[in-house]
Length: 587
Image (tube, rainbow, N blue to C red):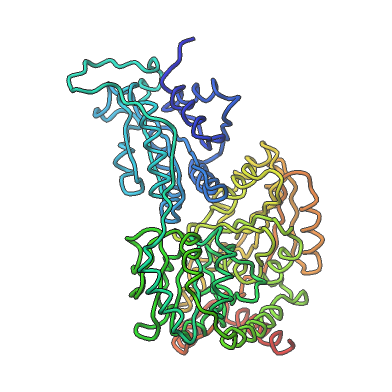
């Protein structure tokens, strides 16, 4: 059997170290599926139920391993379904290769069935985007696509007509008229060693050394440089604030960490931003500028790998273009030690804040407090656990009540903030790290969108644990409506409430439902002990608000306005807020 072009494509992926492709077959990629079949001893194909999940899995694979994630979809609607997960990769700078099918080249442009110009559709999401129109273009275009995805930290897309997929490998059917030969390259990517100029480092050091109160904001770009971040914090006596995506950069129990920032953040972090005279930003493009120091109140030193992003959010006095690790290694010898008075002040604030959070984690509250559920997860997860999370109120509970310690990792759709990636993220992370505990902490809204992928975990024997914080509503939107002064509308699902535990069992895994606080810990332990995928559906208080660290007068006013205008559940919400206050007073 002669080699076909699709086989060249797959073989080159193997040479790049790709061991997994997430996707869903279709008649537009039958040739590529044959290429996968012929190479099944070298590369595994993970069959999903929805192409959106395949793209999320490829993104999570890239985030969890640092290696290119690959997803595959057929022509037309299959390729369209990839888009949301690919935007997740684009906005979070994860290297992903999307491969799609296309109608046979002879019928392109004739409005053939499922004919969609996927190259045009993916023009915005892709850093590299090409149609393969000649077998001779492969494997070179695979090399360029993957190198570009790594170099620009984003999405590359290759779309291949059906007839090209099954054409003889290496065949060049056209007469060459230009002074060229068929392209040839190698599967090699060399990451640049990016270090700022000495003069820029000196200016940054002078500014930091001359400051009285320094604060550090660390993002996911500082991943792998946590020890250096701590050294800088110790030298400068500077508290460390972490973005949500950067939660795993430094452990939460570090004496330098004040927690997150923004609506999901902590009061000490919020106070710090109003107090400092220099902010050191490390590998972050934090978008919520309302929570950063007001213009003119603090100088800013920003370490950013992409010069186009330096100074995007706030005016940056000293931009340092470079890798965070390489930059801090060069900067540290230039820094002068400071006393720890500023740091000690915030350590006291952090102790008070943690007492505040602990009060909300009470097992005595009925209905179950989502804070209690998150805290129980924190207790029961191993020190090398990987937690994946959805967007919404669930992210608030994870950010505040699930702690990074040891080798724990944390992944979510950071910048896109899409619903539904928590489950596919967990599947991809478990594929990449088969020996580690992987837990998906998700809301019922996000789980319902892609819940068929629980069957994917069961089919592949992946022991992921799914914990559904079920408030039977779109909780984040509910509270956003009220903070705008509007009574909630269209955000509670009502009856009948799906039995997600039964769905998990029907998919081939373990499933149990909990609606009493006293049963939470035992149900989680039983699920964690199960040898295979397990789901715990926990009915939490639907009226528990994800309160910001500080409530402004304007927010309180709008919240009250929503009640006046006819908020449909005023008594239940008021009761929950009263319980929260009582628990804080008890602590």
